[in-house]
Length: 81
Image (cartoon, rainbow, N blue to C red; front, side, top):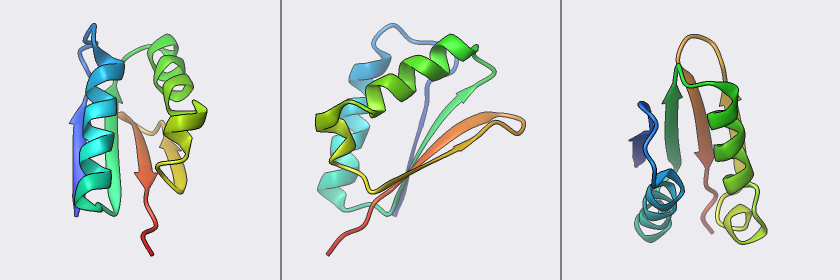
């Protein structure tokens, strides 16, 4: 299962929405979560990455993949036992 969230255009409660979809991915045992931040600036990308690198959030996923080609996206990969 693959879940997606688009945070472009920038929304004020972005961290809360990412936390909600991340919890949904954990509950449904998704394989990949795609966070699309689009053409937003580097400050938005840094804001997302800082949120995802918090200790309690980092423990939820196994690997992060970033891409900047065209539309900016971040993929979170999960490993379930």
